[in-house]
Image 1: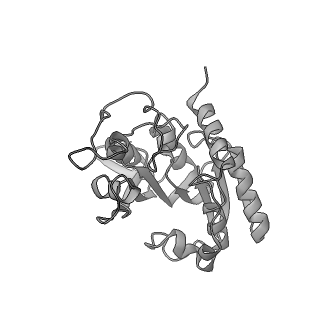
Image 2 (image 1 turned 90 degrees about the horizontal axis):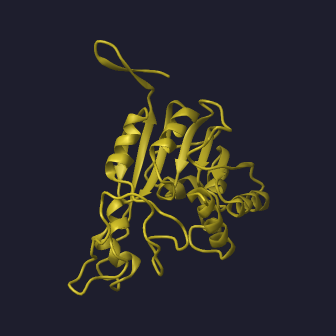
Length: 266
């Protein structure tokens, strides 16, 4: 039986070969000020120069190239070999040093503990059945004090219909508590056709992160809403259903039990 990992590897290979959204290299404009382009809120504290940075599940020639252009020592991990080939192509074209590794985000065993100072993780946790193993792996490969910036699909966006209802707004048609992948979807700008996607509740997205040895320092819902947009469009749906949430977390150590709960490096 084909695993979700194998299914999504093939799905993203197909999407990349079609040059679908989220598989395209960064535009020339982004390289004029690469760090500002990827870190407009300043969560990376002004510079990534010389830092060991992991772009996790981030193939496609955008994230890795921009962080490398900003001076980071970049490794990009992705499950899709076609996406990683694009990272290598862009790096060669722009004379950037980028290491590519084909692996799943929930199995980073190729890396030693504390291999990175920064982990950047764009929207992708929806493609694995469980989010906790991903966080555990990130905690292991990120040094204590390191920064983990991740973006996720909002659970409610995964529940809501693609098209507006006759009454206005967007109907929640999927249960919040569910097992297994979501039904296939077509003609959606909020989900990727052909992939297996999973709804992760806020208890998983936020709670599992804290339980894995992180503290959340920043939280945002990237704005995409437009009240003047046409019903059914990405920006109109975003007016009712925010599509993403984004977090900055810091790796602080392992929790140990003594007379009181304290945090210690580890």
